[in-house]
Image (cartoon, rainbow, N blue to C red; front, side, top):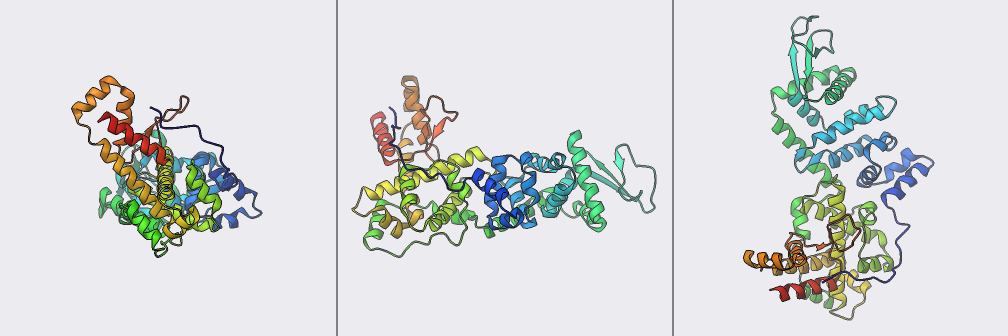
Length: 415
């Protein structure tokens, strides 16, 4: 049973700001250094993801220290752990340019607790009261004429070079800071440094408009068709919309947009307000589902799922009353429409969980396609198996009420 169908041609959203379009706009500006300050940092990070870090040197050079600090906040973490591979990639970025400007900028922008974490993990130091020309052992070097001897051992020759180069730059920039960083491991463990750095990072992201876990959970709280109909009938208080968040247009336009949501975007008057609210919802979903910001594939698929849920919410409302789409949006806003569609998907999820293990074994032996469908609907955020023959992806977002109803009917038949 197929749950996708040929779709009629739809109006295009070409012209809105994807990562590629924003990048071209920056470097076509008369003063890129000034223009880049008008772009939200998360959008700049999306551009860097699209270009690839090694090809983003020119862009990184013209970011502000504050912008680069946030870009590193997005990129250097895997859940609540420092992503060491990402850190080495950033330190290696200087190799693609003529001088150490970018390394200097990274040092000025990165949380110093992260540098202290790497010092604690990979550097051994020996301090002498009287300077000496004799190293305490092989592979030690001295930045201060024999008073302090340092050994870097990351287990990788290239990473040793990168960390050595960073330490030398820190000493040349500020000897006092160099000694302070070297002393931090004596008073803080690696886990303490990592935890404190993560907490500071979360505060900065919240200030930037990224919802915390509690707020992200509220965005996913159940909201039923009855609730939506009552609110629409009473023309209830207008939902809070963008929360003064700047739209992150690459989040919105880099990935596909389901037809009902596209219709809404093409019909409303205050597009920026709608973009702002959708940005808030998308970031709430990223936080709720614990997706790392640098995991582009997982993030883009999640964003398609979120847009698909909004589309389901729109179709549920359009099919249940005579109000037009503009009025529905005006009263409910995108957040209630998302919660409505997502709640329907969670009902579908519960239907799929009714199958016993023995029943699933029988279905697997009888029809593996049916088994795969059930497995996808049993995921925490339900999806569909991908039926496109030439697609590189194994699943696709549920993006219409017809798909929801067809799946529900199929599950009832299998039960």
